[in-house]
Structures are given as structure tokens and as C-alpha cells.
Image (tube, rainbow, N blue to C red):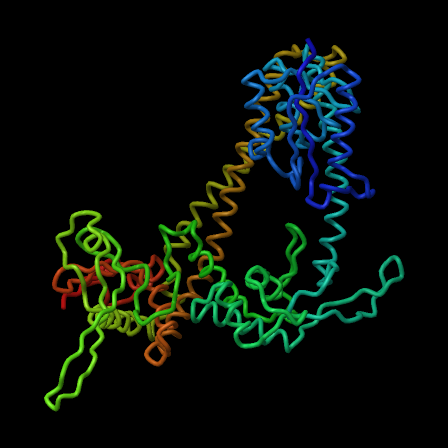
Length: 542
């Protein structure tokens, strides 16, 4: 009976799906080579998977869906041989890929490469030899990647554009600088006509809660065309709103440089606030949303008002009746109310009122907002923001120092064992090969776990460093909002309200409980004279 084969094809970038750097069909080439090889060996291909745009160096095996699917089929005994064009198609992570190959071998699955033959694990010598092979391949991969990154990174760090079309809001101008090929390098400059449109987008996003769909419609309705003279698409608007170039930051992969003042169209704090507001509106943040999803309509509250009895959402309803005056004239009086969705739709028992007059609820909330504004005006943002964040950061620094020490020790152990591998193969090591193999895996796990912990703690520390500046900017933002709130249109008031207030719960007789968003809560708790009331949850009866 012919042996059953499962094939895996992988390319690192989406551009390589059809063609690689030599303009050769990469995925099709791998597939043809594997099929020809299987035919030659008398094997039957029972399945195949392809990974497109997946870097074998950057992406862990645990996060590669296709590889995990193949491992599942291996456990189910659906094939006998895993076939790839070259072993680097399985991955290029030197501290991981050889162990992935060994995993298949332990499941009784033979691993073959069209170019390199079978990857054997019949002896400890086979295993250690394979480790060396992957380490060498990984070294070459890193060198190639480093050369590319260095070239692109240097361009970014020098403030030069990588190439391609200029993003909307900019144009390309000759720099007078020649590259190695004696071609003149172009540089980015701000196009003021387009920049005005970009500023409008960010202003409407931050001040009025416009998302990419609404912005695209706004631009199209006002006859503002894109660079090609066509209507705007929401995807194009979204790309602009998320591009850090508009705050003067150049990017190439993981390399960031700047800010470059000459490229800045949007102030950094304004850009960052837009990112935060857009994140809060995503479906993934549904349960923790702090800004209104929709800023249209007549009500102050949207999506953050709930029944205080059953916890159901309060939704708006409009009705009215015609009233005759003493002189006989008919006047239509409209009534807008917040009603309990659970109670009106009889989804569950609710002991509260069916509805609450909108202008009464909105008036109470507006009064609370005025209280917040009054408390924050004249207070020192620098004084209020600091101490709690600083204390937490000191603890993170201490833990990070310990994690780095553990990682240094683990790396030394791992590198020492790697040096011992060659000795073991030559029969010159004091360690048995089976013991060395197990020790190598244990050391690898220690390196990985300590590295992951360092990454987590470093991210927390960076977040803490930026948190202080972020909170200061938020404090100043609220103070500035306090000055314009009363004279702003409803959509702006709704955005401000949604940013400050997390949740409004309404009970019978207009007993209203208000929860503030976390930073606002911290601001209020840090202000003198507020300690007599619990600012995390404020109740007002009407």
C-alpha cells in the first residue's frame, strides 16, 4: 500500500503567493515540485495546506493555524509523511523548528523535503545534527533580514520616504540627493490643500464621533473628492486615520522614527486621542465601550444608559399628542423618553418604571458634568496624575530586573549546551546524547519563558511611561471641553459625555447613579474637596 502524504507550502509575504523575488511562481513551484517528488517515490498525496504571508522566522508554530491543523491530522493518523519543498518551509526559528519536526517524528510521521531528503530522528546523533542544521539556516535568515531591515531602517531614521506613492496629504519633491544607482531621491512634503482635508477628518472624528463610514459619506456629500477625483471609500478614510505619518512618525515594519516636525499634519495628542476613540468603538470593545457608537440624535446619552432595576438598556422612543389651546388652535406636543428594553419587550421581569422623560434625565446628567468641570478647572493636572502610576512603575522595574537576570542565566546555559552538541556528535562530550537532548529542550523552555516575561514587563513599563503623559493630556482635554460644552452642538456634547461617563443607571423617581471612566475617577479622587463623596459612583435623586 502506497504511503499517504500531506504537503505544506509557505511563503513569507502575500506578494510571494504567485511570484518570489526572482519572478518565479513560488507557491505553484513548491506544489509542482512536491507533486513530482511524490510521484517519483510512489506516494499518494491525501492533503495539502498553504500558508501565505506567514514568516517562519517571526511567527511561532503555536500561532500558525495551518501547521496546527496538520498536527491535528497527524494525531488522527490521517497521513504517514509530511512533505515540504525545503525544511525552512516548516519554520526558521532555531529555538523552535527542530522541536516541531521532532514532534511529528514522535507521532510516527516521517518528515521529508524535496531538496534535502528525510529529516531523521532515529538516534540522538540524528537529533543533534538536525539542531545544528536549523541553527545554521536561522543564522543565514537573520543575516539577510538584518541587511534588509538595516537599509530600510536607516532610510526611515534619516527621515526619508521608503518609496511608492505619497500618502494623501503629502506630495513628492526632488531632494537633490543621489542614491547608489545615481537616481535622485524624492522626499515627502506636506500638500496643504490635501492636509486641510486630513485635519477635517481628525477634527470630526475627535469632536463629533465620526467614524470612517460617516466621514466618507460626509466628504462625498460635500463634494470633496480623493486625489483621483473619485468618491471616498471608508477603507481609504480608515487608512488615513490610523497612519502615524500624520503626526510626523515614519514607519518601516517595526522601525519607527521621528517625530519630524516638517511632516506633522496632526498634533500627536490629537492623533492619539483619535486612535483611542476609534478603538473604543470597535465590536471587540463592546462590553467596555466608553464612547458612544453613534453621535447622531437628540439625546445626550447613547449606549451607556441602563435600567437601575433589571440592568437592561434604556432606549429612546418618541411619541406625542395634539393638544388644543383655549383659543382652539391645535398644538402637537412631542415627548421623547428613555424606556427599559427588557420591560417593554417583556424579555425579563423588571420592577422599575417603563420610561423616563429624556430632558429630565439629560438635565440631571448635565448638572453632574458641570460639577465635574467645576472641580477640574483650576486644579493642577501634574499634581493629580502622578503618584499612583509612579508607584506601580517602580514595582514593574524591579520585576523586570529580576526577569532579565533569569534570561541572561538561561541564555548562557542554552548557548553552552549548543556548543556541547558538536562535541557529543564527535564523541568528545562527557554528556550522553539523550541527556544532552533533554537538557537542551529544558534550557530552551527557560529562555522562551523568561523572554516572554521580559516582553510583557517592558510593554507594561512603556505603557506606564506613556500613561502619565496620556493622563495629563486627558486632564487638559476635559478642562478644555468644560469651556465649550454648553455652546456645542448635541453630537459634540454626546462625545464629551461618553468620554467622561462610563454608565448611567436610572431607577424609579429619577434616582440616578453615575459611574465615571477610570481616568476621570482618578482625577476626581485626587482633587481636594471631593473626598466627602464617592466619585466612582455618584447618585443624584430628582
